[in-house]
Image (cartoon, rainbow, N blue to C red; front, side):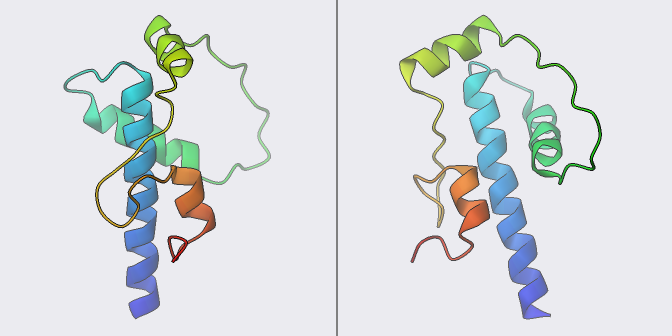
Length: 95
């Protein structure tokens, strides 16, 4: 049961980090935390061999953030300074 709890906590951590990245890429808008969380969940859900949709053009704020190098998310806690991809691949946090 402890492993399931750790998996759930790690999953939430990965979603939180991805949601933070989305928030930053969209220019840190207020009041859209639920939308960012749900998008992060969708991004992290395993694909189901469905045809991919064409990518939408990034917003001007997202393009500026990428150009400024703000595409890397950081968060507080055990995953500080890591991207959501790093946390997802390495559950121990590299320790």
